[in-house]
Image (cartoon, rainbow, N blue to C red):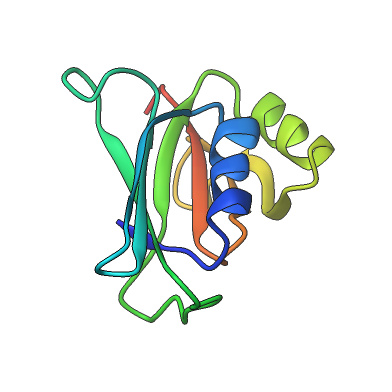
Length: 122
């Protein structure tokens, strides 16, 4: 679960830049928050990312305990170029990781969470 400051902007990032689908979304007026679940397929068969928007809260500190979300892609170079063309912030261009040969690239989502794109071949 990630807390986000602008739910629409975050949903757009995860669907348009990373190709996820909005699986479901629900508002909780008594708790003053909205939940959105995104993923690459049905939750019964695939993991889902939960975004939580607490009404009236527009930003959070990412924190020192959080590292990044990692997503396997077919072609890291292509995925980074597509993300860049859509205005995503690229933190690290695609290339071999320093401690091995796996190709990785890093993006930041609208709330500053880092997303690692890596090749499926380890």
